Image (cartoon, rainbow, N blue to C red; front, side, top):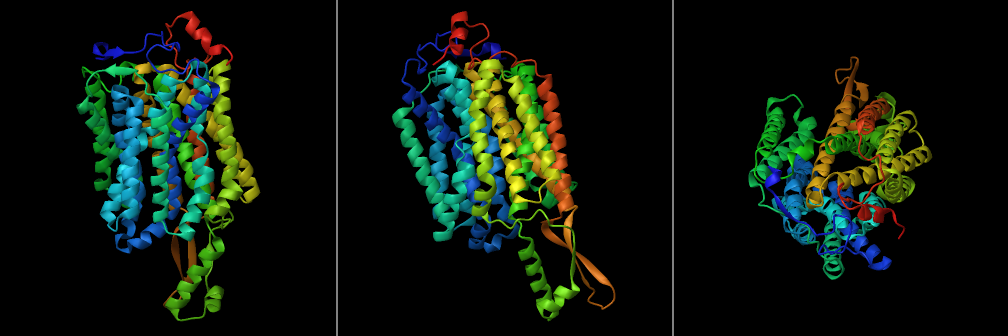
Length: 551
């Protein structure tokens, strides 16, 4: 059990004394900001690559047309590998040093980006994507490093900024990604990521010290294998269930196998001499309820992140013209003749026909601006009043946004306003939930604690996306055309084009998921006192008081 774990924490009562931890007490404001910014840039790397590469899937697919529907694996593998390796890599950071493991993660990210940029082999391209994904723990490790290095009073705000990010994924990626793919090729995206990883690695080496906070134990390889394999199998099912068929026995085998392995992981951890994370802490209300809120909140975030870009970038006119041209070619008739003969069932009033850049300019920029502001603001709120209230508020705003999206999504101006409101909830939610984990877990388990939070988020996002794709598949746009026999009509479903009623139902479903998150947030008893930046409950009174002192 965890009682057998010996730790080497700096002798500062967890209260921020300089000790041997490398904490930047007494450092200039400029240095503190610089260190925090560099750590945040590391945390942003995985989100940035996802936001840049996802819109280029079709262009990448043109390089390997023979892979067909397997093209989706270039996205699936990111979630699967990141989810499977996240607990292990996070734990390694607690064992061997957070800065050291961050640098190792940046090297695998660099190697994967370089391989993707150079290879002509589809298999090696997937290997490169997998290598990139092993850096999925960067966010969790960054949380731990912020907690170890920054003065306590700055930690809630810094983690709020880290959780919401600099908005690189929302603002920079469409502009940079669009310019690179339009003027060069999709490979330029990966060269950009190579350069990005080199720059942040140099900055980390030069300006960010290592933390000496360690947990002195051996890595629980059995537990690591069980949780990694269990998470991977479950995420494979959630990512492919729609394509495979949710009820197919061969598909269910992945889910059942994943669940069995995760149950075995729980049983093993209760007896392991050096568990991945103290199971008593994992089961405690101050951790388990935050994980539950994070799961349901990420159902909303994953679903909205899929829905709004998809809806706004659907071009109704272009889709219908393409269908008519195909039907005309098949029938050997002019397009105008087919235009008179063919009708469509299903409203596409949500479709704005935006390209990637237009979507960024018209929609994303509002959400990015509000979330970047709301994250640090929620940290200040938590430092002054406690983190439970901002968690409830953030989850409630996101849930309300789902309802408003379901009711009003016919104008891009309306969607811009609602997406900006949603961004406030997004930033507050991520800031409060991450800070609550920092408050709940010992300093020696900061990275694995944040890692478990991110695993819950990965599952929530996958479940949210799977839920809405299942709803949408039952509401396709349909083409009604004269029967080839000349008698009656035939109705054909249009693949991957969904009706307004389908999207409305999906958005309401996301709102229901958000309500569950609110319930769990209300049940939380911790987070009712001002955030301390992770000061231990039994720390000296002077240490806890120092958190509230002005900078």
